[in-house]
Length: 62
Length: 246
Image (tube, rainbow over all chains, first blue to last red; front, side, top):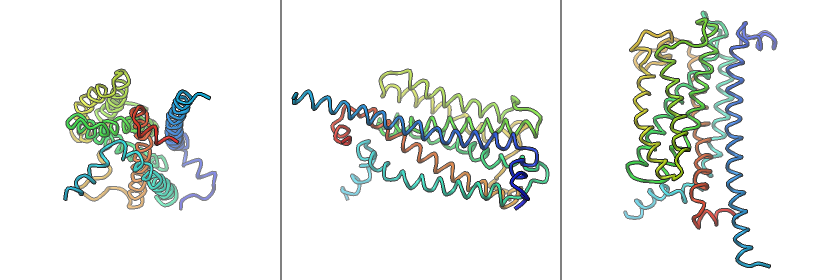
């Protein structure tokens, strides 16, 4: 390993902006995409459930 | 005999693929995380400092995998779109739509990390050279595919229009790949070549390959989730979807 301290690791030999700018944005993108997808899946499931319960209420109104 | 054939084609229907995709998903998530951690460890703690680029070269561990994925995913998208066009199978077209946004994301990451790498090494964020320009066109092809599909109300017509755009755009993938050979570009040549031994340290190469595997697994996992959502959205009027949601 070539790092003598945590500070040295984060400094990236003077390339901190470029290296962390790359890894940071990539990490953010790969976190946001699954998050939005989960929301999309849940939205479809919710609307399907609502539709289903509306159907049931229509079929046997109490 | 007959049984075998039916069994194989069974997964071509959205109804049977939906639960299968759900079952496959956790495996790809676990593999993506595992390869990601291993790749980051190799990339930051095992791979040595580069003699010329210092620590700045470490961008390679996401830049190259993302660039590869942006091209692979395009081929996969075009393959599914073409299959959907030729055989008129719904699931194939849904797969193509499920891959597109992730492909666009990979193209974006490739360009973004490329800009952040270009600035310290070439002194510029962007140049209109063949490699960079053709990769930008790839991003626009993905966005165009998505926009075209979103603009057409009827899903089957949207599939067909998208498929034609995807298939025409395939010509751009070899252009990206060979751009560094065909033209005199600022961008360096291929990092990994089939014909000669790699020009970089073995640990750097491993870090890159493991990260590429992580990106592969991530892309498959995300595409599976998206195709499941698309299946539900498009098949919502069918009986099986109504019963699938309890």
